Length: 401
Ligand SMILES: Cc1cc2nc3c(=O)[nH]c(=O)nc-3n(C[C@H](O)[C@H](O)[C@H](O)COP(=O)(O)OP(=O)(O)OC[C@H]3O[C@@H](n4cnc5c(N)ncnc54)[C@H](O)[C@@H]3O)c2cc1C
Image (cartoon, rainbow, N blue to C red; front, side, top):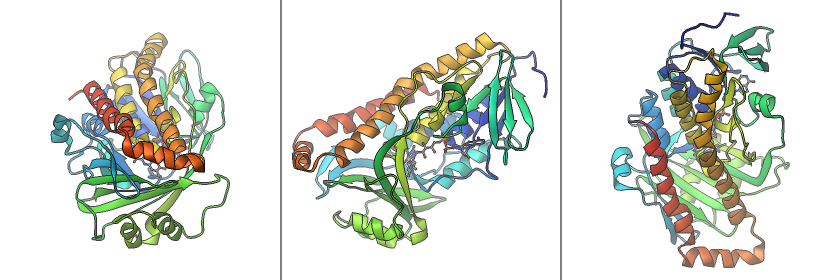
């Protein structure tokens, strides 16, 4: 173990090399600290394929030094009913459109990882490093690894996902919240009739969501899609994912069924949706949380990776000029990081949970009433179409140019 340096250049450990960990590492490096990322796997492993990012995480990535040129396809998003009637038009400000080309930017997860990894200096990420135990005192945080070794740092950032060891160590264990939903998603670069360039269409039938967006991946234009419906989370996965997705998409208009038909079976994946209720406090002493470790976010929000990136950026800002050997200074910096993040992330996580309930768990007799209400009142537009651009503007304004 190395002793603490008296300078303001401190030693930061980040646990996990997902979007949150990579962003936190870049943020802490920019703040002038020495950073090590510990990742249990042999490589940074993208958990899944499909992904959309809103403009704030894109801006945060740029501020963190990540090359975002030609990353993803910017889209104009709409919510529709199963017959194609537009219920919500997400109207972004013209300034935002001019800066980012559009809103919900469609990409595949591996390219995000490649771009973030390329910005991280060599040697910062230590792969094959499974952390098994953490302890801290006034002076430092000690990490204990599966191979019996230990390391000491001034600050620990838990970026270790929904089953976070850091979260458990700081705040105890609690059960996950089951959404009783599952999602099937895939992508294709085939030409499919009915697609519209730079478009995202999220459609709901009485029981199922069937959606698609434009994507751009390593310079190629294509589309990703997903279908989502209720399930018993303990039931085994269907044997043929593509066949199940095809069946669920039958009631939706073009291009969704065509996109699924054009997708290679190996590019179809399934996830069961879960999250955890919001924590009142993230940081304790010299340790804090970012990303899914802090606010596990269901794919229904389509913002978990985005908020993870934002967390990393804001944590970096909070750690600027802080002497990490000084516990009081560290605690104050970590608190200033988490305070504004908690309401924003809790709102997104809860909104995803509620929308999942409304669209997929309403009792059968209420579904026609719900759909009549959504088709003929501005409620959904106000809730999703108008509040979303406001939230985007608010986050964008907090991120430095
Ligand atoms: C189907 C699906 C669609 C989604 N769509 C979107 C979307 O469109 N937009 C969006 O923004 N988000 C989306 N999300 C959510 C997003 O994927 C997550 O919120 C995001 O990956 C969280 O990032 P993270 O870095 O916090 O955690 P993770 O990505 O889970 O990374 C955690 C890392 O920590 C490592 N780790 C864990 N424990 C240890 C340990 N003890 N020692 C060492 N390393 C450890 C893991 O190996 C992993 O690399 C989607 C998710 C799914 C499943």
